[in-house]
Image (cartoon, rainbow, N blue to C red; front, side):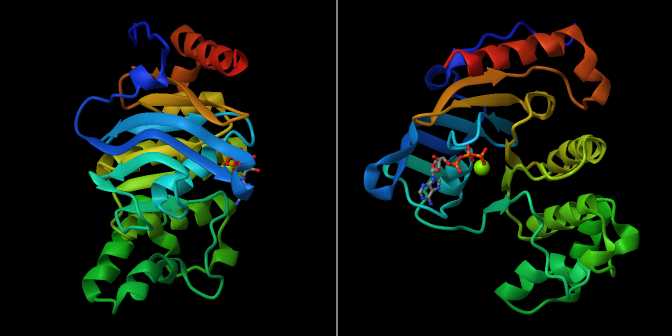
Length: 268
Ligand SMILES: Nc1ncnc2c1ncn2[C@@H]1O[C@H](COP(=O)(O)OP(=O)(O)OP(=O)(O)O)[C@@H](O)[C@H]1O
Ligand SMILES: [Mg+2]
């Protein structure tokens, strides 16, 4: 038996994670267009150090909005949010974000792209270069450090973007459908790699996806979001031991959880 029976609790009661909370939100809300569009309402959650939380929900339910609020890219309309115990007031160096598209600079090699955040902060040292090379090795691109983005596949470009994110030193990683534009085979492979990499870094990760299987496979907990207004409807614990292999996805226990998440989505 791979897991304990999990019970889906409302986010308000299941939101308290074990260990020190790194990301904390109380009644977080966001409206747009002068208040007429409620993108997110009443989200309360605690995310522990090193935890991997997936967020699933239909298009427009506020997933990206929640990540942008945590990252400090946009301001809260209501509630409170803190990272590492400090209220979020704007973008910060301990939080990094990655998007569906890699947004690499075409005229820079892979390693030059990884070094970009360092360069924007000052001069690049030999140590920075060694670190960037190690990160590219970690994401499986040892032999492509001096390749240009146009010479890399979509999956390889996302690996560069992940190395660039880690180069910033952020320990809270916000990943907004990072592999959503890739084919299924590449995506599954990168998911397994991602679990290894974030575990190695001890990073706290929030991962947005439309894919329920992917959400469960990766996560310690799955945040289920529902639209109109966007709400964090439940936090579903996923207790499968790690490291996990893709074959987990075909087990009955896994599929019970898929059904639970699907039902939670459907019941709102
Ligand atoms: N800058 C903005 N101005 C106005 N409305 C916005 C803005 N950003 C988001 N919204 C609205 O807020 C709601 C939530 O958007 P959000 O992008 O967070 O959804 P999502 O869950 O990430 O969707 P998807 O799965 O399609 O990426 C939507 O109704 C959207 O139209
Ligand atoms: Mg989105």
